[in-house]
Length: 128
Image (cartoon, rainbow, N blue to C red; front, side):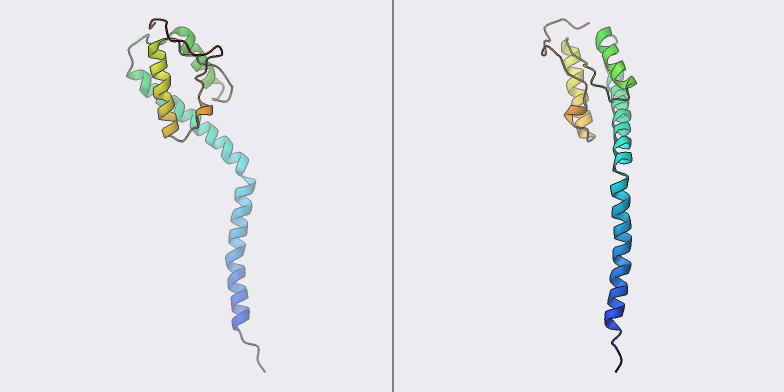
C-alpha cells in the first residue's frame, strides 16, 4: 500500500513557509539596536531640518544667544544629551511650541525634545 503524498507535500510547504519567517524574525530581533540608533539619527536630522525651516521664517535675533547656544549643544550631541533649552521670551516659547508640534508630527515623542526649564517656564522677559 502506498503512502499518500499529501502529508509529505503539506509538511514541505509548511517548512518552506516557516523557515523564511523564522529567518526574518531572527533578523529583526538581532537588529533592534541598530534600528534604534538609526531612528535616533533620523530624529536628529529631522530636528535640524525643521529648525532650519522654522528659523528661516523668523525675524533675525528672535531668540537669545543663550537659547541658541543651548539648542546648538543639543544638536552637537547628536540630539542624545539631556541639554535644557529653556525658552524665556514669547518668541522662544512660540518657536519651542512650533518645533514640538513639527517633531511630534514626524513621529518623535515629547521626551526627545530639549525644551525644558530647570526652574519652570517663565516668559515675562521681552523678546531679544
